[in-house]
Amino acid sequence: MMGALRHLRSLDHRGELMEAVLQFHCEGRIYAALQQFKEGLTSLGFLDEVTSHPQDFEKVFLQDTTTLKASDIVGVFQARCRSLPSSNRRLEARTIVFWKDWLLEVEGGLAGPITLEQVLIFGTGLRRIPAMGFSVQPELAFLHPEDGHAKFPQANTCALVLHLPVGQTYSIFKTNMELGIGSAHQFGLA
Image (cartoon, rainbow, N blue to C red; front, side, top):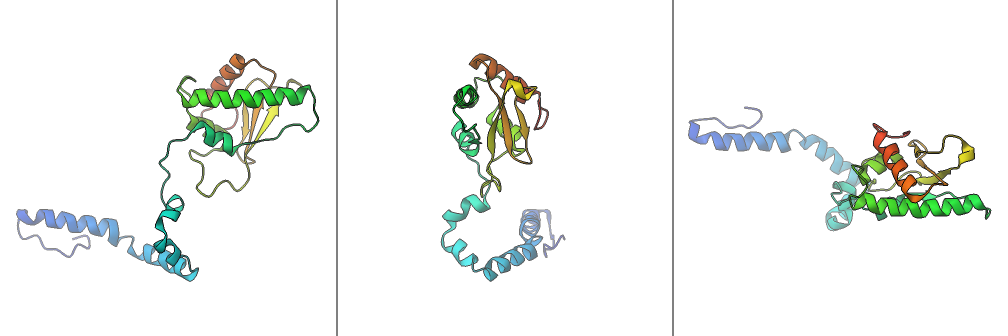
């Protein structure tokens, strides 16, 4: 039955049959795919490294179950500020401070129903930071009042650019971030 190669002689042997069926289902069905994967790693000379240093490759092959932290998100996005010292540059620097403070509040559960995962989804379209990093460095850009509609955050998940509104007090920034990200049903634009 189901590749288990066991005959059920009585109901007392059903445990053995179930174990054999589960083994076939979990291991037997994917055996060919696993062998092909191992052959591919061997042809690259990579399998020996993985088997001799498995702890070094855990992040590559296993799901990351660590809790997302504010510092993780701060580390993902690189600020793209205006180069000349100006009032706009000062507003951008203040907005970066607001961004970091707000992320700490989100991490601490003080930002309503918003989670760090929702922030990451809004800005990148991903629930987790990829183990191998992003193919393009995610950036923080800034929405100035002269740029048009600049009240809520916006994101370009293809280019990995998160646009933050500037020129607000912290309480308005916080409210608008929570409304903007909380109102976005998936990601991108509030």
